[in-house]
Image 1 (cartoon, rainbow, N blue to C red):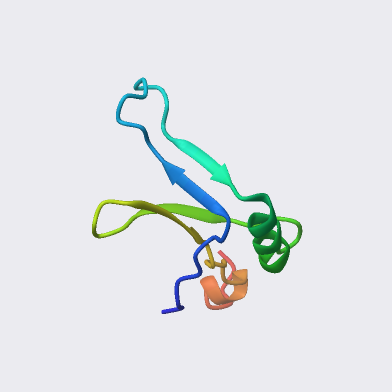
Image 2: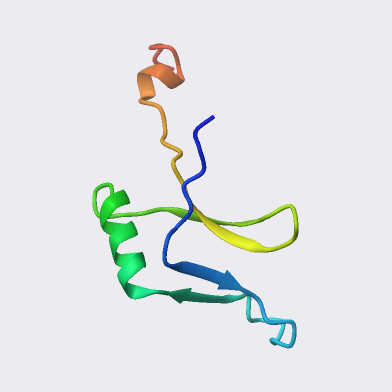
Length: 79
């Protein structure tokens, strides 16, 4: 299992008094977020997950999941 890579410069939270349709608020510290995005960009995209810590605080982590090439997924068999 790969080490967690926290998304520098990003903060997500939900205000308790927010209306039900507001999922949460995303804040970006531009300098840190820009550096993080440039460092972790693949084909112009950076995927991140909003997760909940064991103590109930949300955090943002780099999504490092990558699909396997089709040959590996079906062991080379064509269906």
